[in-house]
Image (cartoon, rainbow, N blue to C red; front, side, top):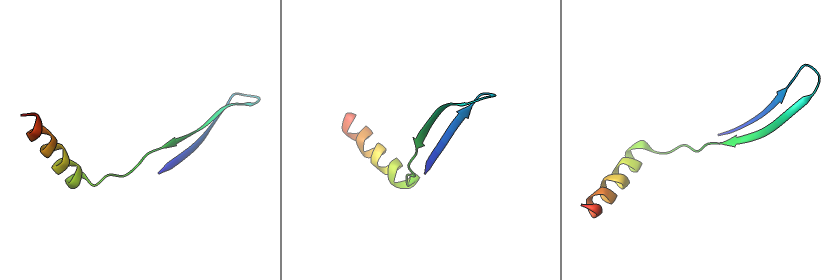
Length: 41
């Protein structure tokens, strides 16, 4: 997901940017984190 944004005041555009997010598979991520925790102890 990408969000482009602009910020304006009463007269002009004062800022702009892009915020990038990514989608994760919750089940796969949970498995990966459990395996990592098992290595730690």
